[in-house]
Image (cartoon, rainbow, N blue to C red; front, side):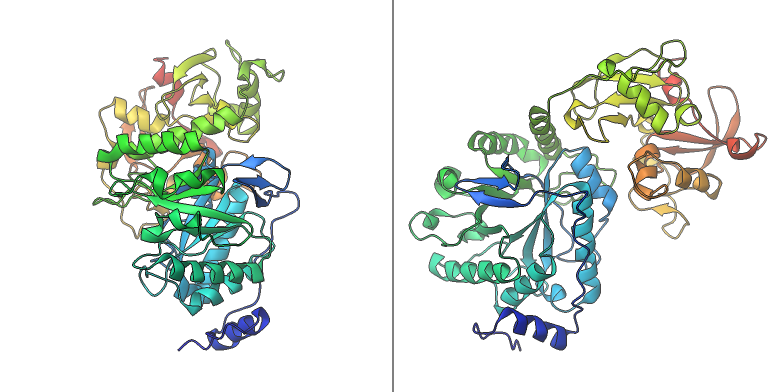
Length: 516
């Protein structure tokens, strides 16, 4: 019943109709703060260039669920931080639902939240019109034009958003799709004249051959191709040959773990051509769904390991590495002392009560997640790890997953341990466990220093990780039988006879790892 079909309607009229007919609020989300900007992108030739003049390749993942769930599934600041910090991505593509964006105020608030989370994480956000009315459609409609005018105006103050105007055109000819693509780009530009728009091809956004002879003539256009193992047309013929004329985003690609070699070969092609990419998908789908992660602890699938390794390697190549031992802030502590950056990290994030004294010198170890050799140093309760790919960021030093590793060394797979009831207080769906009341206050009041007000949820997760066991009685390495709960990076122990906050003690995982 859309009353917005007349192309002569101006943006103010369309926005007014949306407000009056759909009951939407014109209140905009807060724009990026001047102290924490993400440089806006524009197109120069076949490159994306930021406002500082630097060429940018977008590299990241798709984060689905807002196309089928109004509140999203497991979306959080912590998730986007993980994608940026641990996988070293600089972009995410987030699919959305047109009908909900045009009719549901709570859904708009969730989209605003994603805009804020990605900005906080330093990620470029590619908003993708994925579903229209409860499913994918072959072509957009007049509501798509209205939605882009509305959202682009709503987020016009955001410098990190790109607009993927329609997910996968199909069952149509190039001329029909080209007409719609021009309308959608123009709609975005009415709301945000400087925005970069992403335009795919026909055949489910794979075939861009007609762009060579009959292009969508708009400035600031990035092309998009969705590449999957079943495509018949050679990718160089379908889209790669255009890479010397346009910036190209391989906006979706992926497959099951049986296609790991295919994924690695595609990444080689993408990197050789200098293309941008967002792999599908940072979501534990199962049943043939092209997942990059197995579960909400972010353990990777085989294809996910290929993607995360490439993201880290590309980021490391762009960031000259420093060494923890060369930092002049080295601080003596215990017999071995702490090396430079490890010393400042130890001091800033809790010192002796949280980490204990060092129990090793600086060592070279192979990282179990990345397979790379890196500098580490063990303290009584943890392993401090140096990540050169994160040089100059708060994540240059990170903590080992010693809780998970210690259980594995005992022959226990935390995934197989008994789970808590989802109705339990302090329940974490990421692992199916709930933090015991006995330990909650300590977990919730301690965290790494990430510059959040007070101690935030993500700071606590960064320090301890999620719970991976139920509370249970165990005998520790000192011979004490105490109430114990395991976390990804810690073991919490309850010592009722100890004074004050000391009743909660952290297990000596670092010392135990070294047999000390």
